[in-house]
Length: 436
Image (cartoon, rainbow, N blue to C red):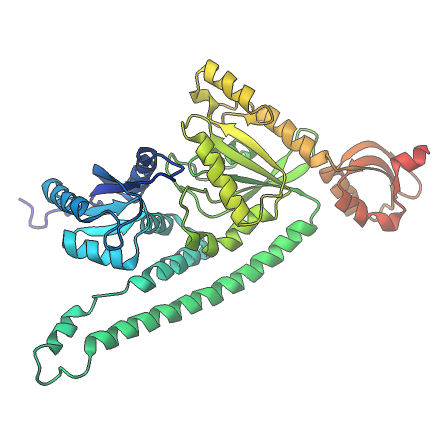
């Protein structure tokens, strides 16, 4: 027997009980919502061992689900030796505190928001992403600070020396002040990073390159689609929120025009508002786009609800006026008859498979049509010293005729209006005017 036995460092898989509430005004069936909560729990490293639901007209103010259901929950937790109870709805600080006292230690009581924040904390890679997640986590934690120093408060009831200083209350206030200071510090850091991102964004807006943003429900295959289009190797996993930080790649359309495609954080139903606020600068990548590709998992039975959830977030960040194309991904997982019905229902959408490459050419043509829709026809004579403008015209426009004259490049092309604006000093004329 070894004197130094090996100790496993593999994280222990926690046993989770899921709790859902059914209401008449719910847009999602409770079982569907709990199925998604189960996937979120698996992403965070927990395994569902049981689930319970409660039908309510209004939430119970003390425990959300009522005393009878809480007793059932306590029995279930003890029987199954659960480590954590996850509620599909948000808990108020007082509800969480009451449930923790009733269920008892060491079982953790968390809600959907806390679970999503935990997943974001695991997957954020860039400095800005980590700061954004930490800010949202601290804002969530601040109103829930309680009881951490209750052992000191108990000393006050005994009387005698040391009982008159209010240690517990003082320490709790110290903790709150530390968290508030940290929140203020994080906001300052994020504002500085946001200014830097704003400068970069202005450069991209000033750039003639057409900007495409991939938006969609989490795990719809946005990263896989980006990899298929651009040949890049962005992390793509069959997990919820596998990637959080935006990734931009250059892509050449069939006609030769260079564009940029940005992969953004996935959306989800009941996305915590604090996360939307914290990730405003990251989500600005969507707001700055010329075209949004709303990527949808065609193989998911809840695809329509996913589309609605994405539309809701786009409205929340004021991106609903940007041209949008729905892209149904993973169509290789659909039977032919279901795919045909989907194509009849969504005639304007694109149907692709990032895994097999099916429909990618059609998607590229759709992007090219949108990118060139507002192009203007140009007939321009560029001096030979303006080689950079000539290259930009070749990259961002469609050159029909180019001849080499004594005074420079004589080019007839179609190009975005923002390029035409840069060529006005060289006597740019509309090709239609020439014909007149």
